[in-house]
Image (cartoon, rainbow, N blue to C red; front, side):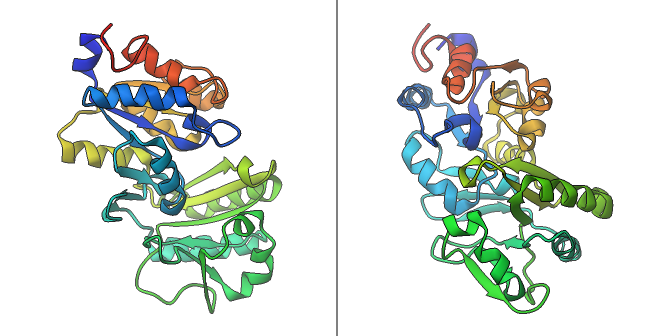
Length: 293
């Protein structure tokens, strides 16, 4: 690692899907080696993902060299992997979540409400009235046992959800996304992201609080650790990475990212099937991250 890069950067923020995972959902040995080198030089490697906490933990365990503090749920939650402690949460307003739930149903989608729960709990609430349709979804078939079923149109609990979302075919998602944006306006962030691991046409449609972004959560972490945005290198591939890519000191969009994401980054690296993250880290820190140049 060059002296200049070591002095300039203190943290590396990495997205998971489409970034550190290839299209077969694998982490390359070359990436593990590169991250081990960074950590040996006291850089922190933080995962910043749209994944739920439950589905982030196995990736963190496999990666080995990542920091135990994780930004997950698109920035609505920050947790520690070693004790499952919640460090930061940015839930939705009940009124917004309730309205989003109604809009999902109006567009023939199954509303799923995500809550902060330990791995032993059920983090998703789905209405009993939607169960027949929910049971047919590829997403819930692939994640059995994560749902708690509730009666009525909306959960009768004081705790607001972190995210309201649906997973379905791309065509249905596009129509619902337009409806949500028109109805909710600036009361929520509405984003759609492809989910190829559940099927070629499967897309997640998520509704967050306006302050629940990867960048807001990462910035909160930086304040706790007394770091500056310009001391961060970030790599991502999807729309929920854009605020983070724009805000940090050095950012890379994956070669498999959309044009919108590439335009937000300082540089574009190769795709997730071509070791793009490793190339980005070599570009930022030298030919062998973690070693002297």
